[in-house]
Image (cartoon, rainbow, N blue to C red):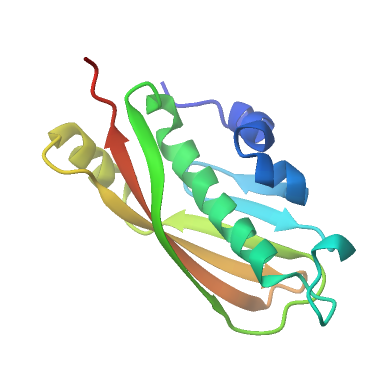
Length: 153
């Protein structure tokens, strides 16, 4: 049974404490898209009064984790999702609040088929776009995830 997305949204700041620390806000969570907003907060500004690069990285990585949880959260009794690597590109100066929108880079069914085959640990990218309040793309990010099968003794 698919995981209740309202449960994901409510439990995310507890499951991922950094989400609560930064005060990230939900914009959207579906089986296909996860969007989180970093409000404009002086405590997380850089030297030019925009959002700090580290805060934007955490925003993007958190959005990627949210889509992974929305996609595979109903299988946490047998799978552990783990981020393997991440790459971020800061394209324009961001000012004010920023939003990260994450999507799986390939069909969920394909990844699930790899899980079920059990021959390799699936790896897949989550693509993230970071935009400012006007919708201008200020950054792009890719996080590679894997799903580790829990071996029961």
